[in-house]
Length: 249
Ligand SMILES: O=C[C@H](O)COP(=O)(O)O
Image (cartoon, rainbow, N blue to C red):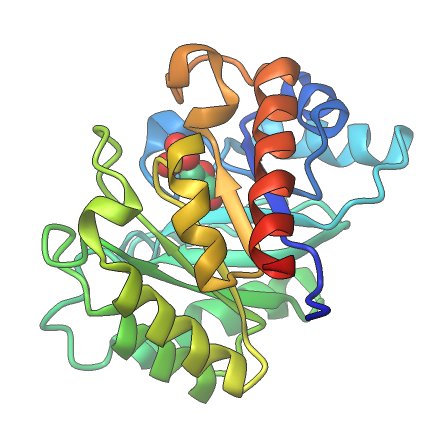
C-alpha cells in the first residue's frame, strides 16, 4: 500500500534549538514555550528573533506556533508579532467545558489575529487526550468543530505534561476511529503527548499524518531541557523504521 510518509514535528522554544531539530531530521518546526503549558506561546521578543532567523537562514520547512489557551485570549488585547513565515496556528481548548459559546469565541480570536496580521492562516484544532482533567471537550467534539471551521488539521496532544502519555489516556481503537473520521474529510491528524520509541509500533498502525514531540527530543526526555540533535535523529530513525514496517506489512 502506498501511503505518504509520516512527518515528524518537533516543538522548539527558540532559535538555538532550530538547527538541532532540523539536523536531526524534523519535517515541521513548531514554536512553543514548554514552561508556559502544553500550548505555551513563546515571548514576543523570541518571536521577533525567530522571524529574523528563519529569513536569514532561509528555513524552508513548514512552521507552526502555539498561541496558548483559547480562554487566555479573553483578556489579551495585544496580538503577538507572529513571524511572516508562520503557516499553522493553534489554540488550546482547556477550561472551555461549560462555555456554551466557546466555538464563537474561537472564531472571534482567529479572525482578530488574521485581521491584525493581514494574513489567512491554516488553523489546527487541538484536542486534549486528558480532556476531562483539562476541563475541556472530547476529541470527538473538537473534530466536529474542526470540520465546521475548515481547519487544516487536528492535533491530539496531552494537557498535563507530567509523564502520562497519549496512549495511557486514549485507546488505539478510539484514536483510530478519530483518525479515520478525520481522513474521510481530508483533515490531517497529528498525534503528540509524551510519545516515546515504544509507542511508535502501536501508533504506526493508526496511520496518523504527523507525530509531534518535545520531551523525546530532549536529553533524558525532560521537555524543558534543550533539544538534542542526536535524540531527534534517533527518534526519526525509529519512526521511519516502524512506519515503513507497518505500511509494507
Ligand atoms: O506538539 C508537540 C508537543 O510539544 C509534544 O510535547 P511532548 O512530547 O513533550 O508531550
